[in-house]
Length: 197
Image (cartoon, rainbow, N blue to C red; front, top):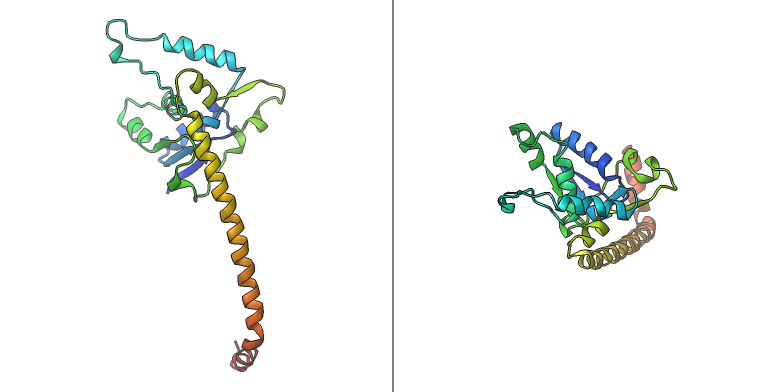
């Protein structure tokens, strides 16, 4: 059974280290909302680091790599890959057990998402320390789907809110129906009591 982690509010490196360890122990991991993962340090520093990384390429044939992923999910995937011996068979198997997504796919919308408290920014970082989101850095260096993901997330949250309201109404109606049926069931309850139930 895979663990579904909500990446929002987690520090990138610490979350990657936690995920890498779990993968090597044989646990399947799914990370959603990768665009909300936090990079410590101001935005301009993180942008500068990524832009300098974009210059790294094969001089003879750039098609050979290194490949610069612009999607936040792929950025986080590559961060985890750096903490796993991915060129060995064990490492390859571990990386096959990781899935990363921007936003929350509809297939995972109804599943319970977990967090890792010890790697969250509110627990680990100085409150005055500057930070930025991985999605912002990705957007500035060529990721094209930030507006799409935001729209889909708004839609998902509205659906979730409506589902909660519907569930409350159903439980209220059920409680009312049980209360109304108690009077009719009293004679049967007395018969059951005679037999020790």
